[in-house]
Length: 282
Image: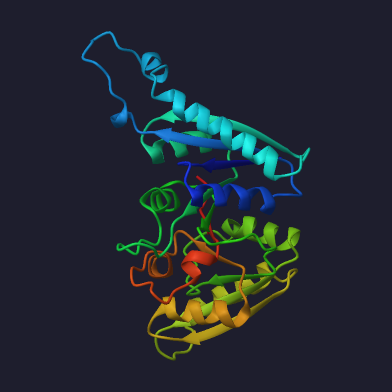
């Protein structure tokens, strides 16, 4: 049984993430928790010293959120044939967004957070919305980031960018290994360097560790030299027809360059390819 948290702001891209999650976990028994968070600061409260948390929760501001959550459940039942393995629940919370997600991850023993994100559009060219960026950097839970233009395709090819500097426990890769097995995917382990250089001793040991860990699964190693990591990823995604990119959150060197790069006019994978972000468990 998997527990999946689906935060939503009722936008088009958050609905796209919900659709993706339902398809991605189609063959697995899952509890899906559709969560909408209202910021406490947005709730208008009078000056009465006797106001309670319950009063806030019963505030009229909750009603639109409840109605929209019910509408999402109706839309799910309409757009997807009934899957007896899937059960859906709605959650309406008043809190700061990251705190709410963290709370439900702990309480519901969540295995995956699946979130939509709006890619390169508008003047700001924002890759990852602030909420999504906060979750994948501050909430220790495997997170699947689904861009606005991503359509579900069984992930036959998954890219795993790494600098071969494993500063994390190898068990952090367990969710990736499970996905590779269940979706019969091939893993493409990708090392990108800004200039040609041989791997040092630690990197060679890490490569051997990865090779051993994924030895029972289809995988291959690839090496690219490019001063811009994001350009190298784009080239690799296009040449290999990659369906998903997996990264370890702790590996900030690659992580920040690939996910949080701001010049994205030609970086289409930001709006098309889902990211699986792995965290060490606390």
